[in-house]
Length: 248
Image 1 (tube, rainbow, N blue to C red):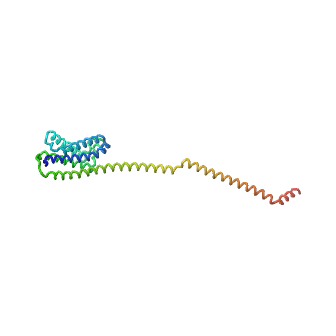
Image 2 (image 1 turned 180 degrees about the vertical axis):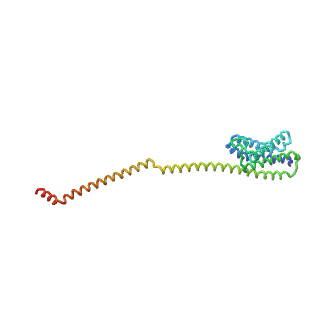
Image 3 (image 1 turned 180 degrees about the horizontal axis):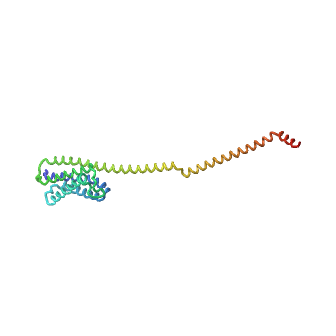
């Protein structure tokens, strides 16, 4: 049998584990944006995982001095995280950093982790006034609460992974666009200006055409000269009459 206090504390521990798992998937994204933000989320992730493990494994120790201190830390850290998430989205935006003053986007990972943190705080506040005496039938309620807390956890992790894949797709698209632009520019430049090899081919073609024209001209001149010689040979009588006249 479980007591209401131990049950609510264990529910808070499961919620903390869920929020920590979601935050673990967004640490790299925050670190790439600003390393201070990445370190903050890494510390928050570590705290939520360690605290959640303690509250889940030893929920009955929450009644002692150490347990009360752990409960207080759980309320303060997770409550502050939930408030910070809301402020950076709808009030002042990011308080400092490279995007200071800009409202951060609202995504599934943030919504799910904040919902788990709120559930954690509510469960811990309830555990303070809950009875420490064992009560029958709480195991079913604990199982139902566990399943209910797994839903936002899975949804938040899927949202974090989808956001990361979208960022990589945008990067790949940008690289492909640059390569295409450069290739197109180079191709157009090559088509518009002939290469040295093309200049040599054009020069050789022009030289060959000039040589052929010179050869044809020489042949034409020679043919005309031959025609004149043959013409003189074909008219011997005209030469004879010219000689006779010159004699008279």
